[in-house]
Length: 134
Image (cartoon, rainbow, N blue to C red; front, side, top):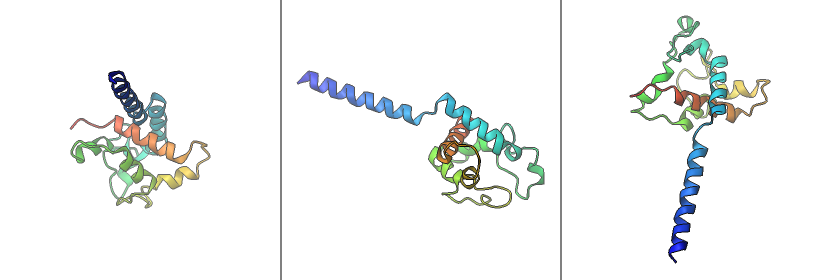
């Protein structure tokens, strides 16, 4: 009986650890996210994501400092919420207009064979990795 309980506890711990790893980005995911950021976001948000890209001054509404997303959300950063904003499922003022495209649409028209959801999620994980500490 005791060995069954120990095995059950071990099995649940192992499953929990696998689930936690599935939620953590790999180095390749962060690298892909950084590459997408550099290609699609840095011109407006800046190389350091602080809203100071080379074309930021010409925009009607200044791009936000993307390193402060967690600070502005009481220390929380939701990869899921950011993914929904980036791909257009969660509308946000300023997104979808001439200054800030809905990237889900833009990525789907790209010649890059990477699935749109994977590209969006890797971008969100990259943004999570550069958040300022609250």
